[in-house]
Length: 329
Image (cartoon, rainbow, N blue to C red; front, side):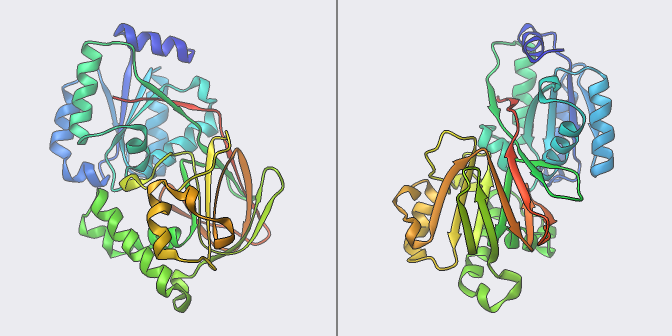
């Protein structure tokens, strides 16, 4: 079935809708009763619960075999990352159902960037209302990062980071996450710890910068030690952070901050608020847009909050996929 047909069925009120719910998601745990009540109120909604890589695959396949037109994911960025990786491994995006992501995790960067605002049960209630009184759907298309490294299957996600950002995510997997803090407060805590790493990382190996070589699609090479490097298909990150200022008409945003940066504290606000165009490359700040790049390093990296490890003789290649179509309510 084509994407156009699925959209037509959604607008006509005849679409089949399936939902994958991760009961371990940060927001789902806190709001489980309200979320389940909202889902149960939607007639003929097929709901599958899954909480790890194996059950994600099983649940997605069960929903796809039911020939759904819309896949509703009630989970966080890590679950969405796992679902994307399975979908891309098994079928072309043109054969996917429409995707709707309800922010049900500890971090929910992708749905927030797409424009999904409100508590999970409120968004599900909006979906219920839309299905009862359908109109022309509001759709957003975004590419996904395809991350390839020799020896492992391709990884798919919306956000890639190395250096202090990856260190911060690793820190978040410590007992901090067990406190139960989610959303903006959790993100602010990780950001504060990462800023602390900028100040004292040289004395702490766990918070050290990353040494790498990044090669752009046009052949331009960046080699050195960087506080962090980001690659994303998202226009903004959590807390509406917008650390990109490239002007190239390409789908992936890339930002580097050199270890030998100048005036970091003065530069923080433009770096985070979307005003990075005032920052200078010669002072250690660089951002551009691209469709493909390669990174050589021996270090950890994250994709949508999940931790991976590169190897010195195995470059990491990042490229944009064909766009995925999201329903935004």
